[in-house]
Amino acid sequence: MTAQRTPAIQVRGLEKSYKELRVLRGVDFEVARGSVFALLGSNGAGKTTAVRILSTLLRADAGTARVNGFDVATQAANVRESISLTGQFAAVDEILTGRENLMLVARLRHLKNPGEVADDLLERFSLTEAATRRASTYSGGMRRRLDIAMSLIGDPPIIFLDEPTTGLDPQARIEVWQAVRDLTARGTTVLLTTQYLEEAEQLADRIAILHQGRIIVDGTLADLKRLLPPAKVEYVEKQPTLEEIFLTLVGADRTNGHDHNVRTNT
Image (cartoon, rainbow, N blue to C red):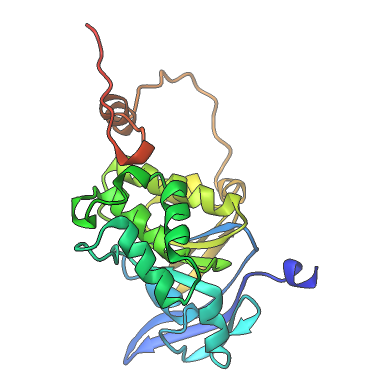
């Protein structure tokens, strides 16, 4: 029970500089277990640097960070056993099939029955019918879903997703969003970095805005909205957004990675 009450991630006074450039200037935040925490910021704000420190790929200059109860500086091996990191670009082997990619990672993690592990993840991420196709034939959304599926092998309790939808089209982005929702429904903790405001709004239980190396606000979406003056009630005719038009025309069905066009009659 104590472990469940302890935050999945605790960061205090984190600092990092590259020569004269101060990237992180005393960053503090906590991530509750089983939640999605969005670290929001523009390019160069320090989001990836923070994730690299939390995943033990980079050492902080000052401050402390604990992941799954383990100190990232002194208990790096324990931290690595607790996490999985998905970077900004899908790290799949395009020569291998989707199933072969998953089996390869399962074998590297010394898991029993890698075929069963692969088949379960292919089903979870709606990739079963594409299992025997080379990953090079996958769409951007399918490749990203396969990448996230690979990161789940071994059931890590904490996942870092570093700008997971960068470069994806609107339909592929929504596929990835659904994959993230499925993760938290199973109790996985997700730390998501993004520069897309809508992505944070759609997915996050809490949002922290990182600006010029500091967290300038941290709270729920409702908390952030209260920082602005109350909205005035006015009648405005709502027009469909370009994204809504796009998804209606091309279809948003992610079943087995197939696209289904929606035809309209005039």
